[in-house]
Image (cartoon, rainbow over all chains, first blue to last red):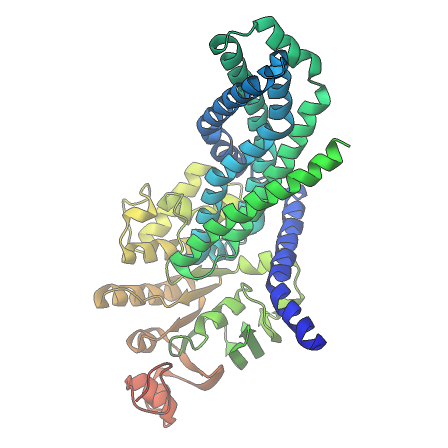
Length: 258
Length: 252
């Protein structure tokens, strides 16, 4: 009975543990690829454009509406006990500490993470990754490293934009639509917001960027099974990246804000 | 030049290679024949180090691939050119960037010189005026040719062909056969081709080896293989459904 149970547990855990092992190996060779010359500058710039610049419109829309709805909801709630003056602080703290990094990461995962997995997956099933190797080019260094670095750099950058635009969205609703005083909003933002709120949010974003890029690259890089496999890889990339972002967010918050 | 000794490889529970022994002499054109799923591609991918054997050794120019580190493997790979079954062109790059990829990465040539070399290699495989097109704009036969131009761009000593004629019409297939022969004559390369196209095999091979059940069961010249007494080889080269080779998943 006990042996059966252990066997069952082993069978269930085998695949996830193997996946975890392989992703750690990929992380290892990615980190090795970062420090070893040459630098794949062209690919890095290209990926920074893909992940960062091309994600900007959708990130902006997300940020402004998140800031707006946050202000609207907290204004309605706070008004019940006469604390409308604190809406600015709520928006600023929520955006910088939590919503900025997490929402940006989720949006970018849906956009750029899916694209990464689909592109690398297609390259795998059409033997383009094998072709790179036969041309004496390390595919991890050529394909994964630029995506990993760009994720790590561009996600904090996008998060900074989200923070600012979110706060402006909150300002717009509170001051322009709900008629609160502009000074009160700005004071509440300025007085309660600390530098640590901002940079800890950016640290989170950096981690999320590395995580989604690594997971999406991994899913694409080890695709098998033709077009269907590419579809599976893309779905897997978005699901596992999003889960990792949401779960690690809690633990990062515990660590950063203790 | 290339020697495989007792090569074993399995994927999960699927045993593909069960002790392959094979030698390719310098300048020789070896063709490995075998049915679909017999492990031909797996065999070819071992020669260039894309796959690592579970057991056994691969020698290329007397260096043991399993003992090489990443840099050593890179050096060895520069002796090779490989033409993939699906051509495997980089679809984000133009034709000439594909052909010049190796030069761009491993030499300090300026772009215009790389393009010049690429155009010359394209001409060698019979393609003109396509250098600036994207691979997606080309037909299957043209893509194969671009793949071949890319494979020969760095002047390799060994060319590997993964089912070069599969998926092409008979005329285009024969044109590719002629190109393979031309490459050998003009560039003096050693070549290993895997195929199940017997017409192509007879035309391009010095030596034919047949892979069956994970081992090489027969080796010989075109004539020897054509007249082999081995019932398995006979069935395959004559292309009959009845015989000792059982078709997977089909009951008779």
